[in-house]
Amino acid sequence: MSPVNSIRGLAVAAEAPVVQSVTLADIRAAAERIRGAVLRTPTIENPAVSRAAGTRVFLKLDNLQATGAFKERGAANRLALLTARERAAGVIAMSAGNHAQAVARHAQLAGVAATIVMPKFTPATKVVRTEFWGARVVLYGETLAEAAAHAHDLALKEGLVFIHPYDDPGVIAGQGTMALEMLEDAPEIEALVIPIGGGGLCAGVASAAAELRPGMPVFGVEVEGYAAMAQRLAGDPVSVGGPTIAEGIAVRDVGETPLAILRRLGVEVLLVPERAVEQAVALLAEGAKVVAEGAGAAGLAAILTYPERFKGRVVGTAVCGGNIDARALSNVLLRQLLRDGRILRLHFDIPDRPGVLADIAARISAVGGNVIEVKHQQLFGAPTVQSTELHLMVEVRDAAQGDAIIAALEAGDYVVRRG
Figure 1 (tube, rainbow, N blue to C red):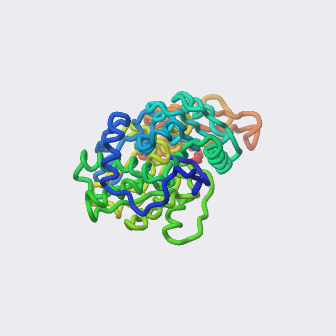
Figure 2: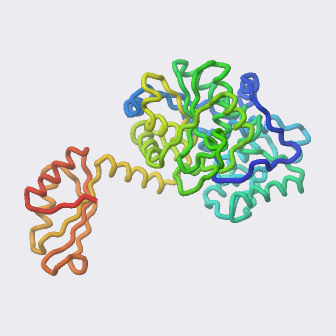
């Protein structure tokens, strides 16, 4: 999925005009074109996820694609649609994320030269991964909008075909192949919940579902800080911004073709808070043993946030990307442990005398807690020279065990603050 961008309308003459629909026939044809080039990923039901959601949930694991995201579907189909002249000319795309790698990989497989324009701030790992697939990477601009404008200029100057990440019917049809697989592998699904960035995936899935399962609801999902599609559908001015873990769907300018499709099909967009996305990433990692980036977990976040919408329904959602930074994943898991009460952060002012620290540790150990971090400030932090500051991080099974540890400490006349 593409991070915050301003590339709507950037297209060379070869790019298709805005259309109002992508048909099931288009999507079935795309499935035939990409067969063998794109992994048919599993659709699984996970007991831990279903239990947390309060309803049966099927997960479409497109994080298992070679580049770690669903973008391969649209890129592979769009490249397969190139004419002989266009193949000889080569393609160009702008992306700092999953679209870059998808276009690079499938261009390499098709024997087509690919240029990817990435902003200067793009992390080196993403540049290296894109180059790994044989693309020429051009670093340009301080913003995604500047990189997009440069990609457009290069397309015109060098006669390259611009491969849009979502505002292209060929790309949308490719993304829609996900719905074909999901509904074939899990026919009991009664509703679909699909993350929205530029809208290509949701538009493709909704287009397939409308003909395969008339009347079955399809919900789009955006994070609260980037509700561009919801705002456009409502006719409101677009106002987005702020940090988000779901950077892959942090989009300002949604696609005009996806917008038209979602409007025509009556797709409702659900907004989720950052905390719900973090909760979903952690649940997938711990409960389903599935690594998801923030954007890839947004569908599950919506199911957790709006349980009344899905109670009693069998729900399918896409884990549409797994490219999350290891440090970010670690932070999410630790934050969720704190929220669940499985890690305690305890603060004390204790008497500065021998044996106190050992007594506190013994009380925690007696209840089964595991001290994983100790900070003991004797000289400068305490309010008097007769006391010392103590900060502990304690691992526990659950909130009940945490409460028992607090009770054991208070029984020893220690004043404990959680934080």
